[in-house]
Length: 529
Image (cartoon, rainbow, N blue to C red; front, side, top):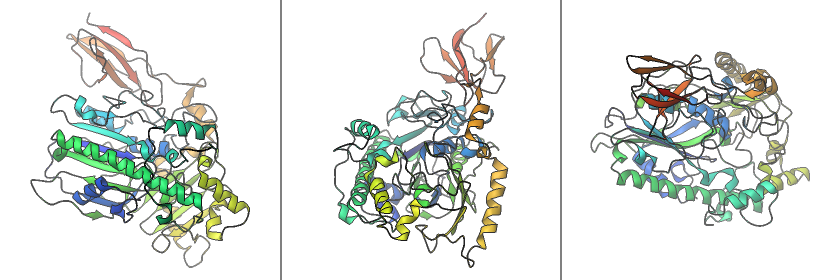
């Protein structure tokens, strides 16, 4: 277990989540990007080497992160719900499930995030999700400064600098209207061109061509740009005297924003860097260590709740990774934008097993958004003109029902051992463990997305949360929801929605409710009789 003796009863917690990149930083052995702040952070605290998201793409992964439940269990598995080709819908967690920031609010924490949500029971941007999760949305990187003095805080800060769209060529003739929109959107977020494309190391499945090297170099430049912002946040914490009572976790929402990484169940898509800084007691040296235990993104919620001394609900799918070890992690791939698919993966420290329900769908299929990246189109052209070796061609070919990889001897997952009689004996064991897992948590992809969507909607519209009930007793307002929805209230002179937890003594206030996956109830006005 990591040292926690130096923390107060309720430490501050800051979760820094970069977008779309694998372990391409110095602490993990890749020194191409200039990332002095991450290197400093890693020297101070623990570097985890086996942390995995539950999906290789952002919205399903973030749904699992925020709820502590695998996205397939509550209809959050398809990318994405709010822009579904079938029409908008929202994932529907069980009534009792609450995001862990809301559970921290219940314990008195001030919670804040920035402009990105993307939880599948919300839209992409702030203002589209349950108001009960956050005290402040669309906050600055120093959102803790908006809290009451001495109030502990939890902040989730996202880093757009490293998003896949940053790999798309920032200038020149755009490939599509979406590419042009990306170029315009990132005018003020173009990283300095520092990385020499000739010096990047290519994984064996990439062809060694100009666009591959240029796009990968741009990816490294974006990582360096993100690192600068991390440094500003750490400096602000230190300036405010908060650094030594703040648990800091830095990670990414899934693997690289590159082809054969993002959206995939290979390690390049689901394995992420993870640095955790826990305050030490006095001048005790408790940093600079490495931890190789298996950690899933669903483990983050119970771990942070435990650090905050908050109750850990029994409906969480994960464990407190500081106190428990796991044998396997699990991940899922379903519809990717306009392309249907269904794959499930189980990974031990040595083996990865992937089962596909649509074995004819290759990873390198055409995909409108991803195809805005030059290297994708050039790579596909080489495949079509038969200018690739077999290893570089595999991504464009049907994967089959089963894939088995020996990660100890094949870390890039290039040799499928599913039909190798000397290795395939592992499949029954992994298949059994995977089936047990799917049965335990439930898998909404056993039904077509169209049917699942229909089940989630009310007369083909997103359901509306019933208005909360109010009763006045002894001059106090008692609020309740018939479906266990989260309830908020707002004092007459305030614009802030407080989380309802106990009877309210205010003579006049507004109140409303939200069930995750529903629209908010109407806002009501309460006046003491």
